[in-house]
Amino acid sequence: MTTLSGALPPELADDAPFTERTLWELRKKTVAMAGTPGKTSATCEGGKVSEEPGATTRCTVTYEGQEVTWSIEFEKLTDDLNSYDITNAGQAVLTAKSVHGHFLKECNGVSKHLRCDKVPDVEGVAYDQDTGHHCQYASTVDGEARWVDIPVSVGECGVVFDNGRSPKSFWRGGDGAPRSACDDVATGWNAGAGPRRSRRSRGREEADGASVSPAWRRRAMT
Picture 1 (spheres, rainbow, N blue to C red):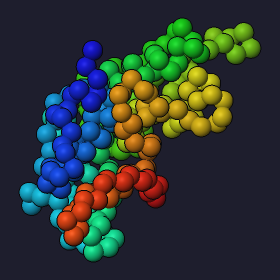
Picture 2: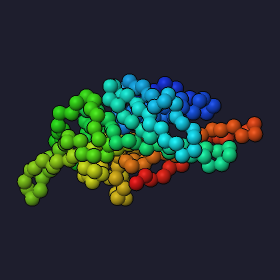
Picture 3: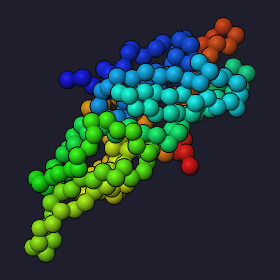
Picture 4: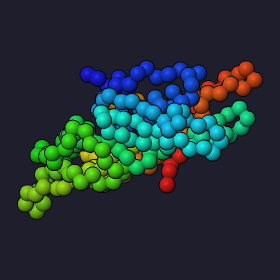
């Protein structure tokens, strides 16, 4: 079985060029969004990620023919330490395997009768918006059987059902926190923190002959 991380080339070393490391990360985020392994490539406008303080570079990942654009904003924290933010530019990729697989996994405990619209194998959709696709599970209310409709959207971590408001099995441990594809340990790595969230990285830099190891932190984007 191929994991999501197995769909990518090996992760680059910390001393690899900044643009190459960033493109690898963008490909990783896009595969996580798709929720299934696929062929990817990535390029940036101007051929590289600008490292000028305050500069923003747009880079595009192509996943099985569908393009997803990301913005990288570079910041200079100190003379020897830099930082960058990655945000989605409004595009996402939806896959039928991810929709069907996650819906079966998440809703199987609610109902044994499940169905979804016919979803294309791969489709470009708006990020964090209703895709127009729906899944349904059978429920009985007051003795009457009916289908419960669940809209499908896509966030940074992949498929989201009913905008995070889902049946009981969609919720993690009953603590009220919505479950998303980011909670799926089967991916082999943490793809992110959820819709409208980006990762800030302090990239490795050389200062007075000493290397600065990467340190990761997250912040919510509005």
